[in-house]
Length: 400
Image 1 (tube, rainbow, N blue to C red):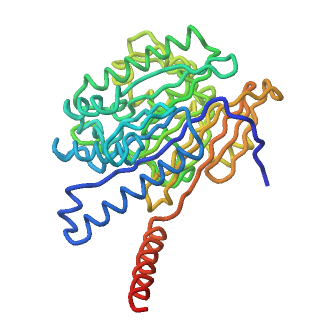
Image 2 (cartoon, one colour):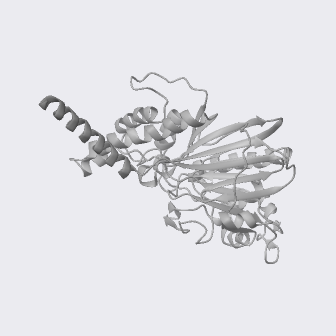
Image 3 (cartoon, rainbow, N blue to C red):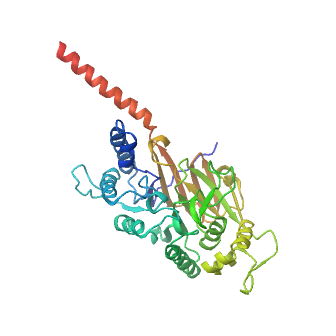
């Protein structure tokens, strides 16, 4: 059985998947029990965030999208949930005083925050960015003398989007990243985005499913093959972290030469001979030649389960889907560490245990641990048992 070696972390991220806190709609559906459920859930998520932040003392706390349960809530309800989430995620205390911390809070937009491509509206974008920061951002961290590039990418509008400008904004950001990488190709990149990459059925619990309305994305489990291949080839991320699939998953991806002949793109004069040739394509070209490019893209990438990735000799990217922190998924939190590993300068060594993974790549060790704090039904039973015992003890004391 594989085991993880311990390396002191140079930098640490606490990752929380899809809290999806509910509100007024639940009260309407369940007038008798809804309020009780909401209160218990808030305290439960507060405990998940609070206990793991206190225990692991991260440099960054990242919520992986789907912060709320619906993107359609009215502004008044949205404001209430903002205040609740600030308390849940340890930004304010019970008296609404700001909690000083040594970590930086960051957030990704999910489909329940800004909608899928068919649904995204201006007010979705505005109120998310007003409260949680930009949809796309990049920053660098220095880890023992070497800079790593960190990227949060808006996955909700990478594929077909009705309000085209939001898709243009996302791809403009991607193209600028590609240019940055060309200037500094040796800087490792860690990518965070809400929707997982495309992969065949059987690699993770979720299967590839995309629904369209009027030609725009109405629902998707994975990004399209073209978008996935483009990001794998052109950003070359060492690790990718996402949410969306509440079950969590560890997968591996490799990129390689296409299976068939070079692809000529109509009258554009461009020919795709390798996956990296996709990096020179504009968004308009990706759309215009989409059917041909998708077939080409699929032939340049392979995906595998986490356990298969551990034995692979051609692995290029590790993808971790962070299990939801909701009580039905055992209150999961992901702890991601990066540390210097002077013992392995060039090795690509990957070890996977369940939904945890450790990779030694280019003199650095990247370690992701999944922490499960307990199913919410168990927590509720313990809470009720505690209340009953307190009541019984009080009655016995009064009857003495």
